[in-house]
Amino acid sequence: MAFPLPDGSNALSYDDVEVLKMDLSKGTKDLPGWSASYDAKELQALLDGYKELSEEGLWENLKYFLEMTVPVAEESNVKMAIHPDDPPWSIFGLPRIIRDEASYDRFVKLVDSPNNGFSLCSGSLGARPDNDLPAMIRKFGGMGRIHFAHVRNVKITGKGAFHETAHTTESGSLNMFEIMKAYADTGFTGPMRPDHGRMIWGETGKPGYGLYDRALGAMYLAGLWEALQRRK
Image 1 (tube, rainbow, N blue to C red):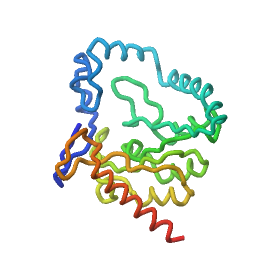
Image 2: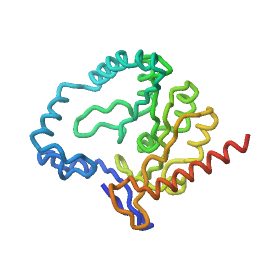
Image 3: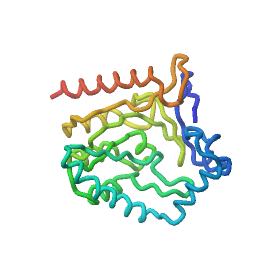
Image 4: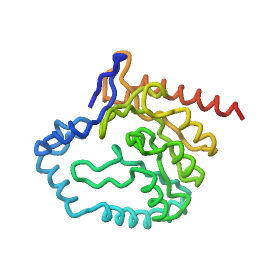
């Protein structure tokens, strides 16, 4: 949902306490950030489909998918990049498995191929304070498994609660310089994006996807990158 920031802008926010108060019996119409295309009956049918699916079952399904698709990706020279769960923990009883370093370790072993990698999103993974993002970037970037970098900042405000911020280090809980330094140190050459952005300067639209702030974020990241490259 849109969260007002002290500078007059707004950004996406998440709070387990508030989310778990939401009444799913009404469908998705009143759920912020969700498609309004599912009515209550359709949504319940989707949730029922997961009743018998545990985390291990989801891992088995993912393994099957990768075994079928990675060989084709290798033949076609395509780099697959799985995005982490956002937020990186289970909600509404639904299993979420791509959430931390341990799950990344397990993922790369499912089908061990350089074409099977990650879209490493600092905003998603950064909502968990136990995720050491620079260390993860060095580890998996050094393995050549980070194929797409999503670089944004979040402010952790409590257990299971956070909101997005401007991209700068001082705005949130993540050290963006150290994150970018880890990418530079591992020789990252893949695509990178500022990902989300605040709604600023009177812009209206879908919360979290402000064009102005994403442009500012891109220039901030480009400035950090140029400085890191010039130090060599």
